[in-house]
Length: 292
Image (cartoon, rainbow, N blue to C red; front, side):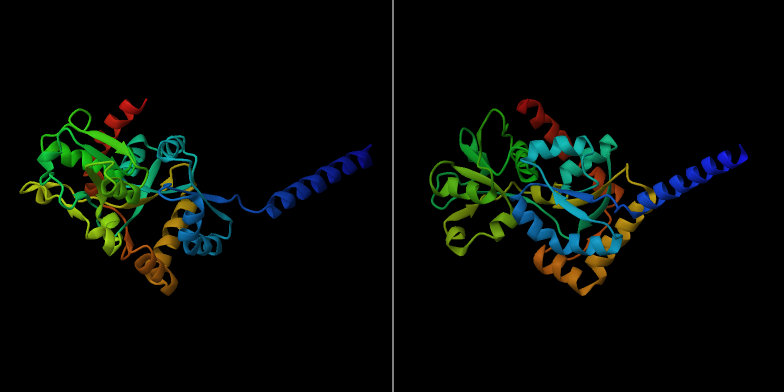
C-alpha cells in the first residue's frame, strides 16, 4: 500500500517537473507593435526593421510589426487593445490615453504642421477664398486633415458645410488632385510639402494663414510611441529602456532616428503636451460621428 502511494507521488512529481520544464522551454510570446498605416505594410516593416531587430535582441523575444487595413480599422484595433505597443498619430495617441488603454512613452524631437496649397495662378489667393471650393485631403482621419479642419474653422470656414473635402488617400495624391484640376486646394503636412519634388513645388503655392494663427496654434507632434496598460510593469520598463537606448545612445539607432526617420531623437512627452492635443481629439470625434 505504502509502495503504491510512493509510486503515485513520484509519478505526480515527475509529471509536474515535466510540465514546468515544458513551459519554461516555450519561447516568449511575440511582442506586437501596431504602426499607423500611413504606407503599406511592406513599407512599414522596412522602415521600422532597425527598431524591431534591436528590440528582439534586447527583450529576448520575437517582435512583430503589424498594422491595419486603414486608419479607421487601426483606430478600432487600438481601442480594443489589440497591440502591445503602438506608434501612432498624436491625436489617436491622446484618445487612447484618455480611454485608458495605452500610456505614452516617446515623442520625436520634431514638430508637425499642416499647410494648404493651391495651384500657381489659381484664383484662390487666400484661405478665405476657399469657401465653395473643393479641397483634397490625405485621409479623413489623418492628423493632417484634423489640423487642416481646425485651420479652416479659424478662418470662418466650416469644413463640413462651406467646402467639399475629397479623400485622396495620401499627401502625394492630394497634391496631384490640385495639379490635375480635380481639387482647388489640398491640405498636406509640412513634411509632405518638403518631400515633394522641385517640379511639383514650382507649380504649387502655400496659402498663408491669417496673422497670428501660427503663433496661437498648439504645437503638433508627428507620432507618439505608446505601450499597452495590460503589459507587465517589468516588461514595460524593459521596453522603455530599450527604445530609449537604441534611439538616443547607439550609433545604429541615432542613424535610424535622425537620418531615416528624420526625428532628431526621442523623449517622453510632457503631460502638458499630451493635454494640448485635446482639441485635436475633439475634432477627431466630430469627424468620427459623420463617418458612421
